[in-house]
Length: 346
Image (tube, rainbow, N blue to C red; front, side, top):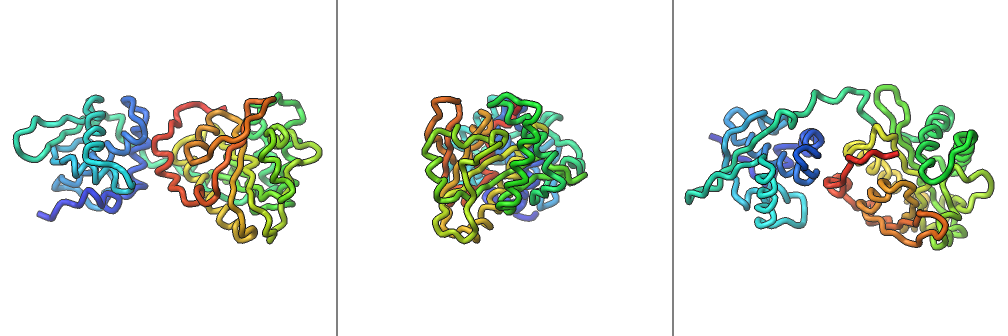
């Protein structure tokens, strides 16, 4: 019999991408957070590899598994192999939480190794591989084909903080056209693989040194795209400017249908890549600023390291800031593993 794979090497014998398929199916069921779901999936994987019929590396998990051995030490290695925290005690507490949800049963201690059994509801099995039209990819903004579509879903998003008029969408289109002329490399979209339609939009705007002061003034002086019908208080920097230190996230939006763990992580990772490329044009960039126009977006920003700054006495908005290096070095998948994507975004 071949030796049992190391629980510490779980990401080698059960790839994170395959783990996420199950975590996405499980999170939210039985009151599980994403972190709890991720731990249960790794336990499930560890039970599966102890089966004589398991094919390693794992791609799918067995719908039913036999009782298996898993000490607190092994559970800690499973749960925390990719983190700088997590003790045997905390792993035991996590198992206790799964026991309380009737998903794990711990066999009475008989002097031998700790033995567990799993109760796996049928709803925990993921659906068939996602259809191609659910797959998305990051791409550059094409002003000729994307402006009208992007303006359409941005108009709905910005309705959270201001009244929409019949001309709001057109105002946004004009601003997008201007941005595309000024610094097209900072404009990104998330497209569906099925028809290349844009379902997400990000505007990462290198800020002229003369405009950086705005980040220390009330946010209403630098509002969102639909209000920029005249003078723009935030001016773009010219590539190569050594005095450009800040990037302003002028927009970062996803259509509500695509608001989920996998898609948000993918689009944030695309933003990381874009910002690293931007550093080639602006070598001294060190600050990242934004304004979250919806509470859920602000919660997301806080989850990836942004901190609130100056509030606005005239609106509920406030500046958010994170050091650029912190954001670029962040493991997005890990940072959002417990984020609640269950709320409906508007």
